[in-house]
Length: 247
Length: 305
Image (cartoon, rainbow over all chains, first blue to last red; front, side, top):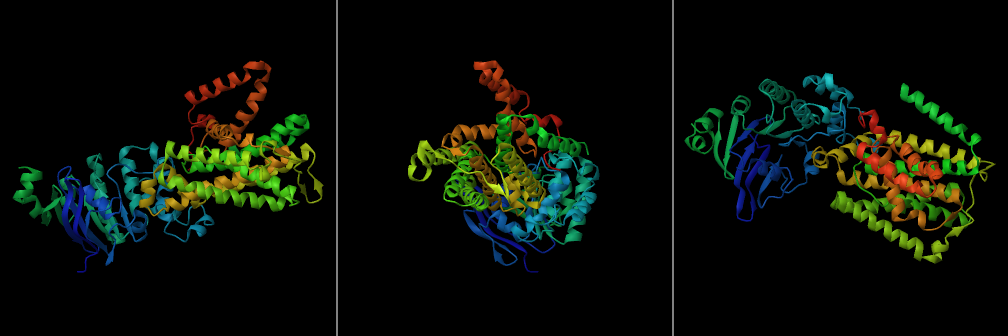
């Protein structure tokens, strides 16, 4: 199958530190790929290099056949690439509903037409559906910043899916989330994958979550890909056990 | 419903206020309208879009001088008004560019530099601005066939214009643009990753805010009928920022309340003679300590829901 996202020999060096050191991988349409590895192994740096937050030292990235190396986050968003961040990134003073609407409004019409668009930019129904899917009805009109960490995490993820992106990079979606919510999150992501048919790349430390969500897993250590394959194979890989998972 | 009722009462009370006031009171009330217009623009830039500006008085000055010069040349107020707004919109766009590179106190200094530059221009370019002698004899406009020479008539004209401008701002912040401005304020990195063109919205926040000040400047020139550089100095910009912050930055009615405090409170404190500005300063310090979100933060409502 033609790769949807293709990362070729991506490197990001900070002086002598090789945060990402020759990583290559591909993601197929609709595929969910997990990225695991110890802290400081270069996972988030790799995400930031793919998403234009930082410029890679060398290497190439292609999305749907187009070279996206060094492209700005804005240009990537316009091409259907979405992301979540490791830390919470909601718009704290906007209501939950407004957070979801603003996440998709810029994909409708032109800058000028949006000035004269209705206040909900025609996205009110879609936002309400997403609110229902993420079970946020009770807090939909409250400022996002006033909610609990877990609820903000759900908003953060729901925002990434509002514009129905073709590719979503999720950076530690389970971090700081209680176990009951982790299971809900896994089900939500599978549901969104079925409904929107997008591809996901998920960085996560919660092994149970990754193994049950991702049919394919990449393990990174010291900026390099140490192992890649089915979750069970990666989990039992001797090098992965020694460097990350332990016995 | 309670807000609408309170607003209706306030609007009616203000409409009847000139009947109970002498000329100076009406002048202060008209000045309040002018600064509310400018303050609403600054509130858009600072409060809604999260940018920093301590150069807003420069835009008020550009609007005022444009109006004064052109009206002295015989242009009608109605032709001058869009020129003042467009001139400031363009100047606001230019001032917005540093905001794309720097933020917070660095941006504050960039806007401060702009204000100082414009002040020096108003003071030194005598051939155009009259320098420290200023420009006098600025005519008041007329509306249809009604003369607005009398202070009461000019108040009602300015009051109505302020309401129109407030409605424009209300529509703007309720539109998707308003939501994008708020996203820019709350988290520009996240905003960009969601396809929000932060460059365009940053520039627009400065330009629209400046255009409001430009319009206010034209009304100011026709109100005082004599302009010189002092009302457009750095101190004036700081006072305008204070107006927005005291009322409640990012709150629609913040500038209305803030301007009332900054313009009217010193007048009410005049019975204290030499101490009135000291008391005013202390009141502001106290307010910033106990209510850093401005007076309207007492209500504790979200800024935009």
